[in-house]
Length: 106
Image (cartoon, rainbow, N blue to C red; front, side, top):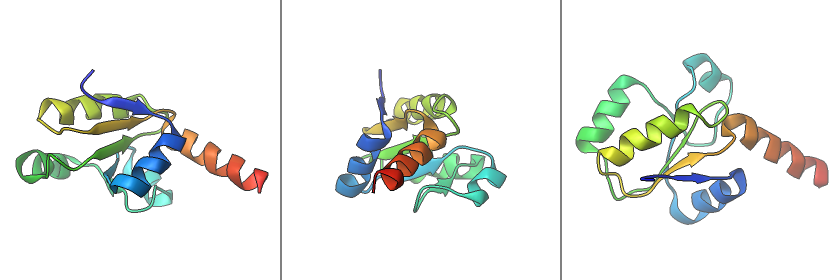
């Protein structure tokens, strides 16, 4: 596999340690309703720009609704030579659930 599937907990660690480029591949309306901090909404223009001029050494963290579409996009970027590509297992829903559990535990 050219990319790695990681959990929400592993994603938090990755964000703190590596400051990856975070890509949200959900619909624009859902992105506008809420997204991970500093995430960019993926559209064809952004994909093309990243493939042509993106820093392929920078880590990419990609997420979608539940973790399936992000796997396809992660593979796409890995195929274009990006070295460290991650797909968030459980997607935004899993991220939100982890945040809710952390808040409930506090």
